[in-house]
Image 1 (spheres, rainbow, N blue to C red):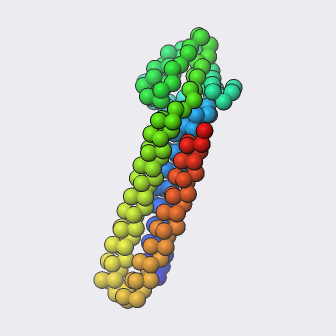
Image 2 (image 1 turned 180 degrees about the horizontal axis):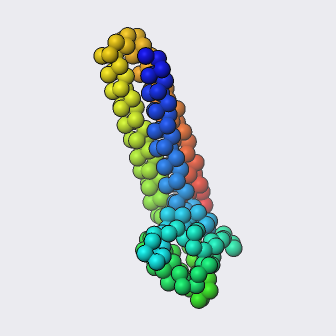
Image 3 (image 1 turned 90 degrees about the vertical axis):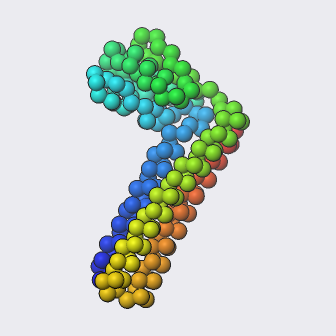
Length: 187
């Protein structure tokens, strides 16, 4: 029976780590007023009928803190990249000179920073919901083991271990959200 519990623990860690990793990815897409190539990671271009990330179609660089430069390897992709950036609702206006697309990243207003801080908190809460759902499914599994002959003491210990894992990931999420919030709110 203990090996089945180890399986539950590893499953809990794995699923909670997935929720945390997803949060990290989502928060990377929230810009802090400084131009970074990773801002465009979530933008896909319809390239010959296939949704393709910009990074696979072009060289994306940040020549300075307020500008992104996108230089596609295939010049025919320029209009499609432009359309994808407009459609992404990032609030950036592409400037196409026929060779390179430049994006000027405006400084964030106080109001926009507060909106982004709310969005960061919401993403953190989504991650915590995923973590709590994992805890619930693990506890349900432990209860099923209890019906199959697992002692009440072992069941309580197992639930306590799952709670410890949950608390650990909750703290990691809080730390990540706090760091991103500080990054956004610092002018």
